[in-house]
Length: 65
Image (cartoon, rainbow, N blue to C red; front, side):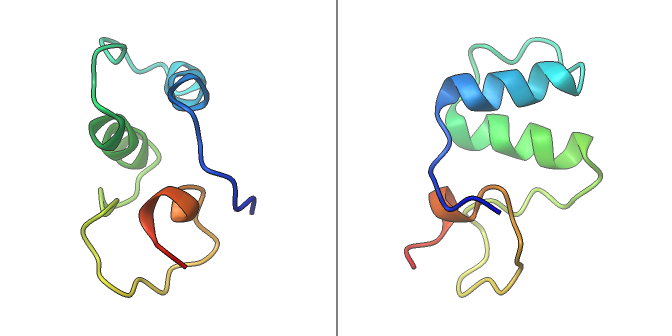
């Protein structure tokens, strides 16, 4: 997976691809949580210290490694 941080546009494009509605005014972390839930994952972004989940699309934004 890429280690680049995702822009809000990147996240909005992902969310639209998942047919999520009412997402344009969400904060970045809320948007990522919505995407995680829509993909069937736990909304863990910024909630796990020392996360070992890899690959993760949101890792560059979530972890300082």
